[in-house]
Length: 161
Image (cartoon, rainbow, N blue to C red; front, side):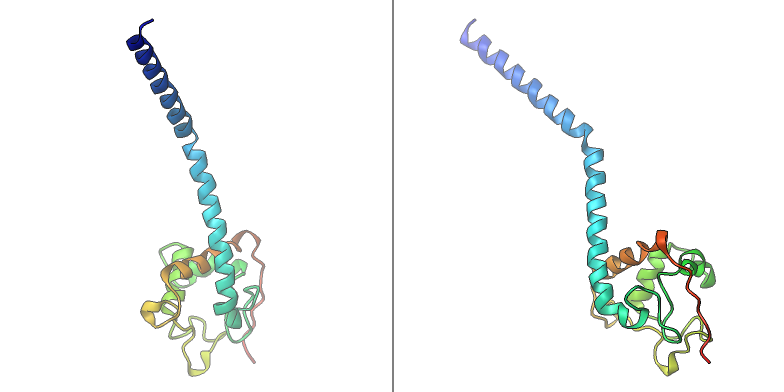
């Protein structure tokens, strides 16, 4: 076998090996992306938990069960099942959480339960509205709250006396 034939044979062999590796890697791409997405979601929930603790727990409680007469529960079956219909929100619950946390709420949507006592019902948290948080941080808080959906409790809410 001449040197030229050997080089051609090695070149073809290397192209076939490289093509095989790219094909195998490409076939696993969907699985790899799913693993990465799951990791990203888990990380967002972890960061959201830290932010919820520092920014939201004073009013909504450390477990998201709310504080009677002050702030509603978020770790509540009613919140996940009925809240969007109560406020006639046509988007997703996650978008509702992001919107509410971003711009706040001037008046309570349930004043008989959470009167607000003359102050904004919820302050704005997005830096564009004068709050301390960036968009990604608010989305992480929303991911943390959405993580409660499967295990949300039924929280009894009573009107203040």
